[in-house]
Image 1 (cartoon, rainbow, N blue to C red):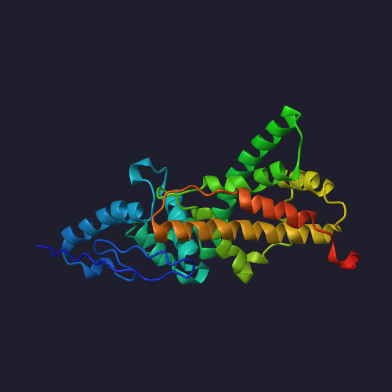
Image 2: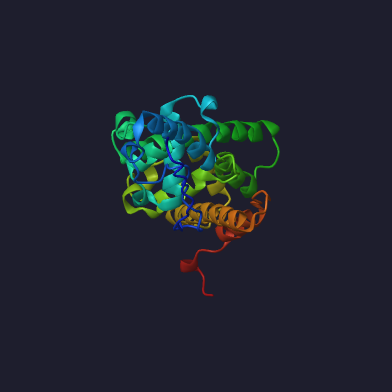
Length: 270
């Protein structure tokens, strides 16, 4: 008879104290050999596929399209919580309920390949939302203003939430921005080639002709990082305080509009 080796413990995470998920013997670093017998291994795998995914805020496995998609979702959550270097590929596979310790390498070759796949998938889906909203804005023939353009740029990232309402991609994206290797992987001016983001930024730039292009780009990049950070901090507070409010982007948009409109310091005597 297999003993119930359920373990309940948490460990602080770098951004906001969201705990690691440990449930029903599927603790990080534990292997199948730690549970005796075939029945124990089967029991562990079943719970990895079910409870571990649910504890991470993922949908039940039958609703998920593929193992590859599950690995991307689990990797996004774990790297978002613990940092790019704070989780191993083995841990990602473990909490995705996979018995093969090399399952991530099989699908993505490396951690860098997994990160690239997550970014490509989320950016592609965000691009579709941005394009639809931007085309709709132009068809309306209503006033195109900085606020509406920033909403189209930023708000699509809020659509990527887990079952607990946490903005998992924002947290993951922040970790990538803070990691030197992934932040500097592509030159800034090459990141958005062929994207509707370029057209939106060109529209936004027309409202800020007082700024040199490099100053405008720097401000927008910094403000984007601020927006993502605010979403993550909101999720941290939501988790710690137990409230169910939705993130309200209005105040951040107000600050961003004011920051973009501020004069260029090199040309003021203030």
